[in-house]
Length: 321
Image 1 (tube, rainbow, N blue to C red):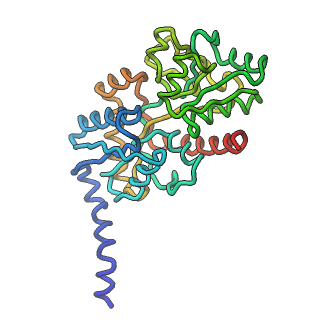
Image 2 (cartoon, helix red, strand yellow):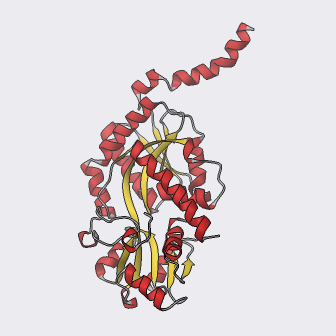
Image 3 (cartoon, rainbow, N blue to C red):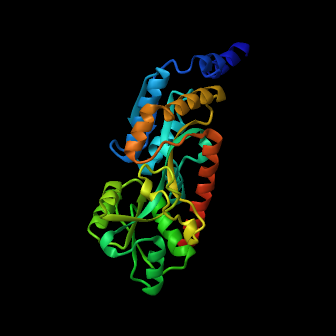
């Protein structure tokens, strides 16, 4: 009986020792795989590769970015949640990408499946309009919608994401008669805005910032303050809250690990991520991407995500049924 018991618990003890204090003390001593749950080349992927390079520079560890896309980001997230909790498989994803997927689908992963290492790059979701529309502010768009019911069009970068929820919030909270036009993605919405095919479009900043600087596209509102935007003239753009819509919508890219990861490992990884975020290397990269980096410690990173999921679910239940 004693031998059987030792054989049964041996693998469990081995796993515990592998991720125990000794392993934490040596962390990181192996390659870290950063899972980005989207195809290569997109905004989240580019930010993931940028922070991975900065983390390598400050830690000396090798960090490999693996793109595991599918199911709106859920495939990669699930891979990390089910991986060995030793700090060597981590998730880099955007907050509203995760919460929107959990709002619109029944998925086999939840916010409780992770520990939150920290956030490093925040970009609000903003509202754009072609200059020839003559709509210079969200207030003007709202006024037009009230004066001309049923005629105003708001495009979104997809039918089931944070942008759709933001459009629904504008329409629902203010009881506006507007038409929400979901495009198949950011590229198609960008084409529609450039072609002046919709009154306004909702997409994550800093998409179309070059066109904004040229004067072709106007930023008429934002889901969160643009105080960290590298382009100073837009930092005072009025938010949803400034226009009577009591929500904040944007995206913070951050790092997550499986919930069983030892706290000592999480703390070491957080220290590396913080140092990388504040490094000159990543600051230069982030500003070239459009925003100054924004280090957010784990507990302060986690709380808004949970609040955002609740808000998204309420918006969907009230205004998208």
